[in-house]
Length: 244
Ligand SMILES: C[S@@+](CC[C@H](N)C(=O)[O-])C[C@H]1O[C@@H](n2cnc3c(N)ncnc32)[C@H](O)[C@@H]1O
Image (cartoon, rainbow, N blue to C red):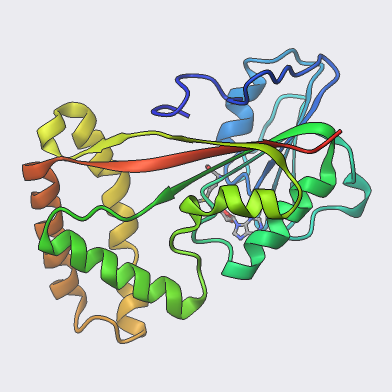
């Protein structure tokens, strides 16, 4: 959660997790968030993680941490009103546009009245040079064609309100990218650039680019622009409460 609310895992004002609390991470991937959280809460708190695939699940987990396969758009029926806190992060390339409302409605359903939600997403838009603009234009075109929600980060607050959450708040972080910001900017580049690289094959298959090598050259120019100007990637943390 760095760059948004320091080293805290739960960033909802006035939220207190009770010793018998239940937490869910929807679309948990390798479980990095739940495992980190589990180290900071009493082991009486039950921590759950779900993902559509178990490929990245760790082999061993603490006794109070449980991972299972489930789509964020269709959580187990018996989980209605069972959780005190639900976290969902970085599902930008996992959920199609209409699935966002389904996933956030599922979070609403499984939360207890008064429970809190925390969603973290990032917008890929950073335009301070021609290569950056071209990379974003291609990404947006790709997302639109496959039905992904490219600017979902800027819309999560409205979507949460629409499915019934109240007290919705947005905090925007700043992840430095590019050598201009020193080692933290270089770390930002290392975190971000591989995501652009991975898009080469699907973009070629879709006919959006002429060749992978041309695309990779454009990404190198984009990195040079990051280094020269320094940019910030803007992760957004959006929180809300299920009404009592
Ligand atoms: C970029 S990873 C983020 C993982 C984790 N939230 C994190 O922050 O480390 C995206 C995850 O979404 C999962 N995913 C894709 N479609 C999903 C769905 N419909 N329901 C739940 N998880 C899904 C993928 O398997 C992958 O683990």
